[in-house]
Length: 105
Image (cartoon, rainbow, N blue to C red; front, side, top):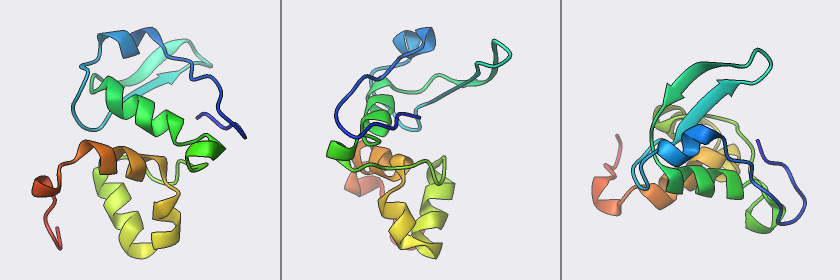
């Protein structure tokens, strides 16, 4: 997670460069402590940058309260305040077209 008080640097791992440019659900999870990949999902570069950039204070100072669309949707229903400051919520707002959103889904 990026946690800076102003604009800063986002370090991108090698898998970022092989991910598609657009799409939904950008997640690349690496267990750096043991130097091997524990989960890899080749999703999109744009979403990754939006998610990580949202952590900077100038862009919202978001946190990682919930990962994934289902968890972000559940967070919005159970704790709307946290959902506003959830990085994945910002990512999905940018990635998903309004036509794809279903009321009550």
